[in-house]
Length: 98
Length: 373
Ligand SMILES: Cc1cc2nc3c(=O)[nH]c(=O)nc-3n(C[C@H](O)[C@H](O)[C@H](O)COP(=O)(O)OP(=O)(O)OC[C@H]3O[C@@H](n4cnc5c(N)ncnc54)[C@H](O)[C@@H]3O)c2cc1C
Ligand code: FES
Image (cartoon, rainbow over the protein chains, first blue to last red):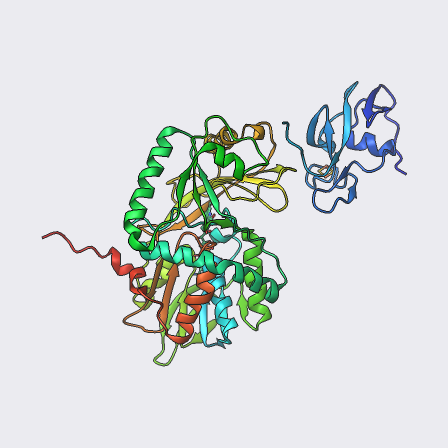
């Protein structure tokens, strides 16, 4: 559904999204990488549970929230991918540690 | 030029509540309000409907706050009917958490004073132990350093932004006319009515209520009234939305219906500077984590400063001018708590002239201390 305007070429890294290994460009943001991979919705909203994808891609709308390496509610558009990064959907509200 | 039965100056917590109450009684009312750059406590406050700490030194104010909390349930239902807006009022009581033995001792002393002051009418807040606190807040583990809490059965909380919106929508729905960006610069009396002058317009009415927060100090003397108020900053923090549910209001911690936690409230003497500072915000966050260690690591999404409207004794001022009858002033901290009495009793006072019992206790004349001989 999403297509890169130009292929950055160069290096790629492997990230883990909900247990699936994805090969993505090393310079990409998490948001761009997930959309290019067609990974589906990246969060559900805390109030109505609606599925959402990243929207503004510049840090203002908070529609791109995901869990990155165990830290919830990270903005995927503000974070560059890293080899081995573990990403999960942000499913509604944050849960507290016991 | 516009005319009405009553002009309400200010569309914040106080003005909007009184004006809403007036149109509910069928009084033709206009609100004249300031602009986006005005000081507007209605948009930056914490949302408590709080009784337990109110009225030290002025029992009438303690009673007034409690009366408002009793009216709040019906008031919230009424706003839902008039405006279709649910303000999410929770009235399960409130806890003021005590984070050291010293805080507990100070609190015990205040409760003793409030009890004595209240006399036979009684004062309902009491200190409870940490394990009782834990039972009242089952969703979160209470920190080891919590030395109990004072529990007030009449305390609660609401969503303050929805409250403001509901008052405005309800006001307009019942025929009230609202004029934003119409800051009043002068008030005169032309022999038959009051004339409020704004930059581009004139408004005329036989009665005028000055309820515009910090705008009052300039306007009140124009109608022979005095309202000695001063600024005090409070900073507030808001967290990301959290799944745990805490229904009870906890003084300086409360969870909104959408899941975010709010932490507050500093008391800073910095004039009209409504900025934020890291040391104060850090203190507020550290207290929240001390109370509930599980909140450590939770992400903050907002921090703002907002200026309180404080009278010298932190209690309300309600006055009608002696030299220019028909001109009123109404102001206080705690405009959320008092929204229900403002919409009921204060609106009725302005509409009908029926003065609520012992209302002279709220006159600013209480500050005119005679000089020592
Ligand atoms: C940090 C903080 C936390 C608080 N927490 C709580 C709480 O938990 N519970 C509670 O009950 N209360 C709380 N308050 C207090 C509450 O917000 C205020 O008591 C209340 O908002 C005051 O209402 P007001 O209408 O007098 O003033 P405001 O709400 O400030 O409104 C004043 C209005 O008048 C307008 N205005 C000013 N000058 C003029 C003019 N010349 N002509 C026309 N319009 C004018 C302004 O534009 C503004 O809209 C808190 C306040 C602060 C700052
Ligand atoms: S997409 Fe809008 S904040 Fe990330």
